[in-house]
Image 1 (tube, rainbow, N blue to C red):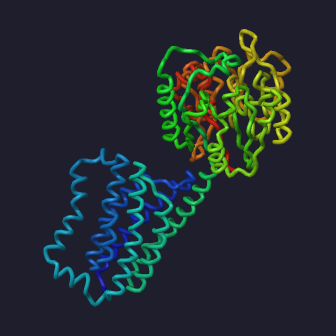
Image 2: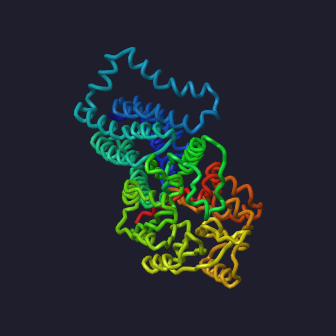
Length: 509
């Protein structure tokens, strides 16, 4: 069927709008290294759909009309979920919504003519028409899939399956266009190049996410004051609050939700009523995972904390990390020697240095055993509080991130040891941020530098810690990542640990 030149130009305009939307979306995706779903993509989609709807009508091609009808309201939903309709007059939205209904009314008022013109005409044999409709159906099913996927997550997302269907549908439409000699339809599918590239980005992004370090958190059942750890942890406070478990659970759930909102991968393990483990909310003390596939289990100071090594949680960790070997150091408990993982040690994983202050919970012989078997160098030092008592865990007085190190130098006794710490941190390229002993007791050193699925740095700390830092300290940290404060006052007060203690890294090998 021959059509006036202006009809083909209209079709090219519609295809050009579709191509432009993909060009912009592809550019933004390449830039961020993940598939983006920008508002302009959906706005141009809705405009292009209107233009191609008219082109299909003028070309008397039901496959085009059918294809554009499937995705039209899905485009509108994405525009709505992105909040873009708030910026346009209501009558524009109404006109957009009723446009397909007007076309439908024109069709319904004379069905015999429609059937004769669009479904039974000499220019498009029925078999070819059915193939064209099938191609459009496959192509437009990508929009249905995208809608279901996004609706469940209450966000506009372009998932991998969307691009798979787009590529397959485009191939079918190109074949249909070539057979029908509709060069506008065939050439218009040049956007298949962008769909293929988005598919590649999506797959690569999924692989990157699967390798992203996850954070294991244990949801408490019987959280409370732990008598067995109180003797070595002056941060713990006994309070008269009766419903401390409920309050801790509220704080825990709020923290998990906040981390997920910032796209930080979180694994939540549920604690059990028996055996009673009041400190299970601090899982980073009994295990650590490493990039070589090692899962290390550690000797714990308090007998009731040894019960936290739950086989079910260990299996969860192994599955998430792809564990290749288990290094069990818990046998040192029989000799009264302890090393409580990333509580006792602050690891500079890149430089392979384990910083540790001596305490009843941190034994030099076990530290040496860990370093020998895991290929780390140790820097052991003495650090005490204002009463002269050893700091129970290294991670309350220092933290090492990718670009920074927070250190409470006031509590380190030996100047030579302090100099060695500073020298190694500087050699590792860390910006040293110094905190006072008072800030240490407000958990300013108990923080963790994490990356979300997009590779963005977030520095997780409690509100207690953030509120005690000076503007200069906050500015220095902010240069290294976004500060993400969590509200956990009851957990801190009763448990004697803060945000970092609640987060155990699960590193995928």
